[in-house]
Image 1: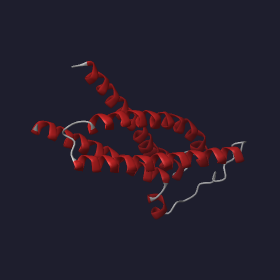
Image 2: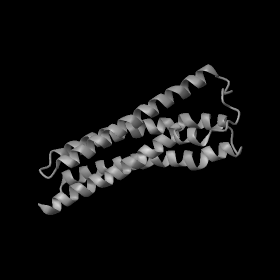
Image 3: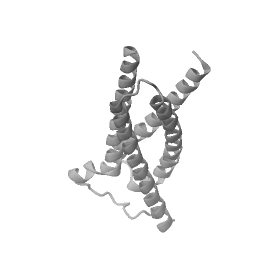
Length: 169
């Protein structure tokens, strides 16, 4: 194993861990926090107070994902075994990731504005709101989780395509 291989392994590991933290956090919000709010175990205010901590971690993950993803893309695109289908799927993955980054930024901005408008911690939607099943399908958490899972799939597909091309050569 060369020094380059070790560096690429560390880059790949950092990318995977950052993605797991982000998507794992979304799964936690989707499967634990949101049902706890609906069932009245915790208030929406509590969730709103915890969210800035979560989003500060996600901001770090986004930076790591962007840097490592860029390095990984250049490494793979400079390979002689990269195919047009690989490039198309990588483009799709990058577009979905960019969409996710925009969603996180807009949600974080909305939370900061809520906190600034209500500095004493009394949030506008502190009461327990029932969300319709259709509306909950398109909530930020659901969309981010779904897109993240699609990206995980695309990552595995890209790895499979790349490894299968290496095996052919």
